[in-house]
Amino acid sequence: MLLALKQKIIDYVFTVSKQPILLKDLLIANSQYLEKLHVDPVKLGFRLKVARAYLVYISLVILFTVPFTIITHNLFANLDPHVSIIVAMLLTAVIFIFFNFFRVWLVDQVALSQIKKGWQIHFPFFPYEEYNKKINEIFQQSNKLELQKKDLQKYILDNLAE
Image (tube, rainbow, N blue to C red):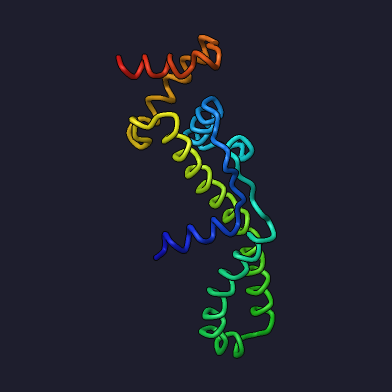
């Protein structure tokens, strides 16, 4: 159920291109993803709809803050108003800060999904989970050799066969 909800959120928040990902773009994106860097969304063919991301995030925040306020209402009603104001300021800051984490998480999820989709096209006989690091090492070696794009796939497949 949680995976289905995650997929619905991703489908709602992102525009994903139907064009296949180019081999070199796939390898660069995989390398960046493995190094925990931000992947270029344009090369992987997706775009975040920021307004929709805010809408989903606000819905999730409301889903969690309403029960929190119901539970803590009596406590804060009996405390000094200054404490309530400070807690409200801190909660507001946390909500705004966590939107950035939410957005990065969404982009990482879609990037991985697009990498796996491109992987099935370019390397259908090499499962992503098993070969992503090995192919990344081979790709790094090919960068040092300054291979042309047309020779890249042959070089990778030849090195995998060894």
